[in-house]
Structures are given as C-alpha cells and as structure tokens.
Length: 262
Figure 1 (spheres, rainbow, N blue to C red):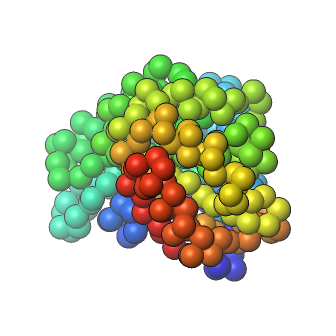
Figure 2 (cartoon, rainbow, N blue to C red; figure 1 turned 30 degrees about the vertical axis):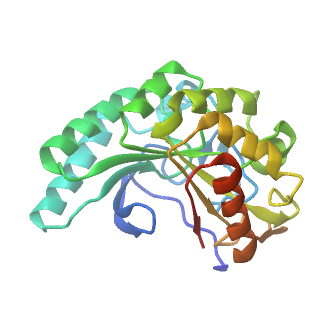
C-alpha cells in the first residue's frame, strides 16, 4: 500500500487524470473544497475520516459550489482540453465525498451533459456514488441520465454495512439495495474488500453480498482492496488470490461479469 492518504480536492475541476477504470477522466468535485462531505464514514476511505458527516445536502448548501459555477468551470475545462487536443473519455462526478448529496445534482447532471454534447461529444458522463441517496426518485432519475453510474456496495448484511461503511443517520442497507434494483443493468457495482478490524472477505460475509448482487443484476462488478493507508489503520488488504476467488464466486453464483482491480 502507498503510505499516505489522498489529499482532498481544492476546487471544482481536477485532472484530467488517467484512471484504470475510466480512462482519461475529467474530475468534477461538487462537494465542498478541502473538507469531505459524505453520508458514510467508511473505515477504508483513502481520504481519511469524513469531516462533515451528513445525508442532508440542503442543510449545507452554502458550503457547496453553485450549479452555475460548476457549469462554468466544466465549460472552461472542456474548452481548454479541446484546444490542446486532449481527449476526455469520461467527465466524472466524484471528489470530496458523495456527489449526489448536492441538492441540485439532477440539474447539474443535465447542464454537464449538454456541455459534453457540444464540447466533447466523444466523452461519457460517469458518477462515483456510495449509493446512499438512490432511494430518492430525483437522484435515481439523474443517475439514469448518466452514461456510467458506478455504485458502491461493500456488504450484503446490515451488520457488515454498519461496520464497514459507518453510515450517518438512519441509512438502511435494504433501502440502498432496493434502489440499486431499480437502477439495475445500468449500474456497475464497485466493492471494496478488507481484512483485519473489519473483514468482509470471509466465507461467512459473502453469501448475503452475493444474494444482494443477484437481486440488483448490475451490468458488472468491480472488486478491489486497499491501495493506500485507510482511515482505520487496523484494516489490511485482501490478497490477490482471495480477490480472484471472490470474482469466481460472483461469476459462478450470481452469474455476473466481475473484474479484479489491484
């Protein structure tokens, strides 16, 4: 593992950065600058613990960049990339926390998609989401407009979800799974596996996780383990051999395509 946490993004636009999963990705951070705003406080997070834990985006609107400012910065970045003949594969909503917490997320998706159509028609839109807001029909509708929604699912039981992801407030895993079922084949599920203080990679933890995948029926599953020092230093990475075993279980039992990233 790399021996440092990732620094938080200091502005709206970052990159483009080369990503194993997203190609040349232009990052769009619609969370606050220099503080992590998230509905989860995941023990493995590479940005460390959540500085502003909440599932209420409206409450913290004043800390969030305005939709018009986000659109302006995206337009500038796409125009500059085009002028320099830099190819953008994905325009990715990510950054300092959970992007779908922004109260104007649906409107922002529409604005950015229109800018993509006019300035970078070869690019896709993507979103890295922790899935906690998907029960909201407005958010579900916005995610359905995104080309590549990457949705988090690390556990199949409420107990493991609580230990692994440490939700803020009353967030139920069952509601998340129900929302992911509605998104279904549009979604790619991303799952982190760890050992140590929290172990979701063992034989006892996998059956409910596999059962959840069977219900969701996503487009595919991406599995990985720790690459950097996590928020909880007691966590350990899962071996590549075990990740490959989990991949085979997903493909055999859930009958879904799965890829290991390590």
